[in-house]
Length: 197
Image (tube, rainbow, N blue to C red; front, top):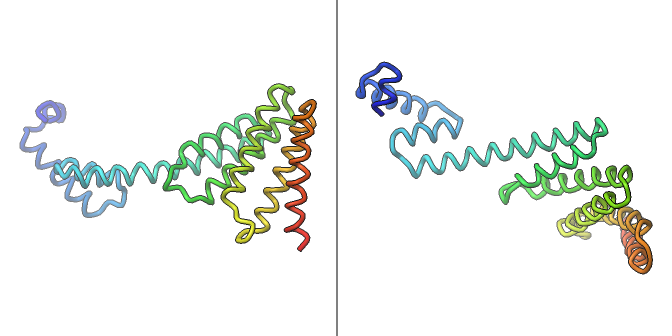
């Protein structure tokens, strides 16, 4: 405290009073949890400060998820699918347990679409990695969509899975490729059962 007081040209008592006044004003008027956390910390209310810092971090994570998604959308529209895929990956990495499941579903779908674009534009050995990523994303999406509660979303995702499996099957030789193509047919059939009702 003494170093801070000297830095600002104040006595220890003047600095303490200035901090107390700022803390009281901030606690009374601020909507920013980070500012309120700093005020609580300055008042040595450490548990309150910790809770407010966590709230601030969650808000900033939610903002970061949204910003990464928007950056991914911008890269996707600029046809820079590698960077779009990377941005959706970053958004998903930041989307913690507090993140709404719908946001994670949207991000997985966007990442899968970026992976599709990368797979169709990449050499065979690289495209397989993106197709595998895409297939995994669609399988995860199907875990979060119920055929009964969201039949159209479920059917569209099954259809997209079928497309990804077909693309991977065409690129894969032998029995493994035939197996992927058979899975693709099953995915298409399942999607059609919902779509034709």
